[in-house]
Length: 304
Image (cartoon, rainbow, N blue to C red):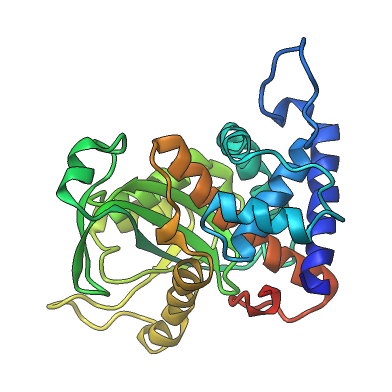
């Protein structure tokens, strides 16, 4: 493991441990009577982030690698089933740590956001689609950027110009991107309400008079390309280079964090594995921001 990644792991563990000491209710529930886990919740979150950053999609292979190379960070490692079970129960904690790190960067107050959705494939065979525990949530959808149909979900992401995740949602593949975005804003009124004048960059799918009117009520100014038959919209010259940012973030999720190789088989399993990858990206940006390194959307600095 590189010194940068070692430093990130230590800083993330300390930050998560401090959070749990200040807010113990955020820890996954466990009975008052019983054995105390030998792997702490802060270690669990750190271990999950290291797995994503180092590109291990198999939990068995990851735990074997950690046992051989990361004993200086994790004196005790659970078995694969125990790791999987505890990680699923820690989904809320992972989400809280992600927000804590995001708000602890100089990028959180960025006045420009970009929004998009990207496929999260959950299976390819017809039998998988019929028999999977994800059926009913996962569904068939179309990915225009890759000109292909897929069966699974969509990750809807709002991020800053440096790629810092601000808000996200995981929906069925056919969910309306506009309604999902409005749902994210309604779920956290202070997110946009506390920063009037926020600029949001989206693609042609984010359109509609009622949709844009509600964004205006939130104090959000939408920048998007004109649709066919529409007059040229303000800021059109800035759209293409700025839109490449969200494409870069999605590519990081797909190529470096293996978003579509999550191997989740249940709703809880898929959710925590997506959260695991979002936290990995946020952790890298947070660490770079605090150590004075260039904040990049690529995670190549943390490759092993």
